[in-house]
Length: 281
Image (tube, rainbow, N blue to C red):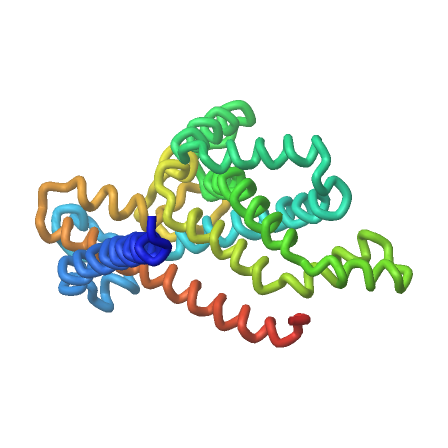
C-alpha cells in the first residue's frame, strides 16, 4: 500500500478522533449551559435548601458545594500522604523488580474497579468500626478510590525523570532517598501536580462511593462525624423529582461542579507552568 495513502488514512482517523472527543465535550457543555444557566442564581449559590426546595421552592446548594470541596480536598490530602511515598519507593528502590510489577498490576486493577464497589467496601468497613454515614466515612472511601489513581499517575511521571540527573546526584554523594526527595520530586513537580489534579477530579465528581458512606443532608457540614451533602448527589436527587423547576436546578448544579473542576484545572496548569521554570530542560 502506498505510504502516503497510509499516512492520510491515519491522519484522517486522528482528526476524526479529535472531532469526536471535542464534539462530545462541546455537546455536554452546551446541554448543561442551556438547561442550567437560566436556573443559576446568586441565591442558589449562597443559600442552603429550605423547606420545599425539592418541590421547586426557595433554597440553594451551598451545602453541597462546601461538602464536595471538603470531601475531595480531605481525600486528596490523605491520598498524597500514601501515594507519593509509594510511587517514590517503586521508582527508587523497587524499580522494575517482580515485586514492583505486582504492585503496579494491583494498582491498575484497583483503578479499574467501579466506584460503587468502593462505596460498598467503605460501607462494610464503617459498619465494622461502628462509624455512621459521615464526612469522615466519605473521605476514607474517596481516599481508597484516589490512591491507585494518584500513585500510578505519579509513578508514570517519575519514570520520565532524566537518568543523568539521578546519576549526577549520586556522584555528589546523595543517597537514594535524598535524590528522590530533593532532586526527582523538584524536577517532576509539574507532572506530580497533574497527577494530584487527576485524582481530585475523580473524587469531586464521584457519586456512587459517597452515596452510602457520606450520606446526604440539607445542612452545612459542621463535623467529621455527621452526614454531608455533595454536588453529584445533589444532581442525582434533583433530577429524580417530577418538578421541572427542580430538574433545571440539577443542571445548574452540574454546571457549578463543571466550573469548579475547570477553575482547579486552569489553576493547576498555571501553577505547573510557574514551577516548570525551576526544572532542568
